Length: 542
Ligand code: PEP
Ligand code: MG
Image 1 (cartoon, rainbow, N blue to C red):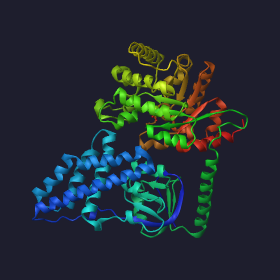
Image 2: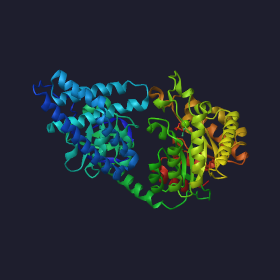
Image 3: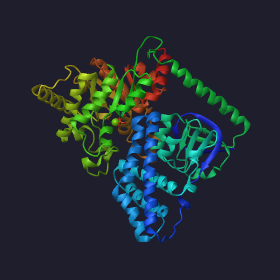
Image 4: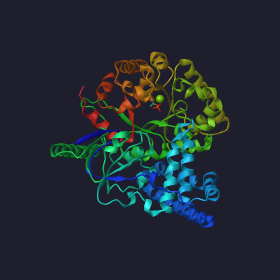
């Protein structure tokens, strides 16, 4: 038996035979052609067929993984139709007199490399999409280059150098026990889709990927990010037990639906969901969240090619509030900058972006952006129980300034005879050491605190959350971080306001008892962690 380790991308255990999907990279040959017109016709036919296929994948994906996760296929259609891209392929065929497969592949690689070199993280992420559409067109042009994913036999573990988003979503979960890839990261599209579809996945196996051979038996442990090749009977037996326990645990979690997160000694904790898009509300409700504890509004900005208008933002916030039907929805104002970039804001390139021009610093500097968002939020407050929260606070003065801008927005709306709710909560994120140390004073200015443990860990421990080299030092359980949290909660309590946690470590069930003990009132986590956390709270007896 051999064990190889990658990145845990989606929880669960799978045991089965491996289907190794080959990469088409080495199989595209260059042919010289004489009939340019008929090659261009082949290309056009492939383009139309690719668009048709993508349309039906989009419709299929809508049903399986929701609107947000399916949008990628609409983007693929736009990319194929892009005149620069398609024109470059045509020119290559005409000028170099080469076969369409080769022209598509060379052009696709060139465009993908250009995307990969862009500074903006979102644009860099599009490099994989260019390769995805390129391979789609090539496989239409030459059927022998199919990688077999659309024709999987029986139940199998799929292994591929990298799975394109369209390949992941096309896999029938009934055929695919798990997938493992050489490339990829926890936040790659395919990993996100695997989690949404509930398929165990290990990505980023890098060099160890070469250890895999077609047809071999493997165990995929998605929770630990491990793949066991040709396990002996004893190991198999052990993993079968773990698998059964995992499945039983998932079933048990469903029984928790409809119950409240109350400890054995009667302390109730609000368990909310973190969302990044209105379409995520469905997952939040399905997993029985008490409300939305963090709507990362910047994703509306990242999805758009221009600054989203007041009307567009209003509609998104209104949708979430209406769908949550009176449950509290905490919407965080724009938190762009650092790792979240949009090209149209033209943010300066910084040496130290995590400590740079981001979040509330941008909003207080570029008032017009902030006022647009606040107007949209206030208008939406009529449609549910809104709370507004501000990120990256480092001083009391910032909060006073924010409150005066809100007052101005209220006055403007009143003058314009536009309705807004008279009472919505205002809170701040506690995610910088400065805000923790000032939390006694800040608590006098707001209705609640929500602790962002991702950034609080980064700034407290001086460990860049994006730096892989020191990833092992990023420890939200570090005593210094826990002291920061306790200090915030205590200062909040003394001033009579509640404190929640919306960073990733809110879902760390090893810390749940500590959080409850010190007086945290709310925990907000990804929708798929809500039930597990409710269960953890229900088991506590202080
Ligand atoms: C945090 O910092 O913990 C947080 C919730 O905000 P984000 O992860 O969006 O920076
Ligand atoms: Mg943060």
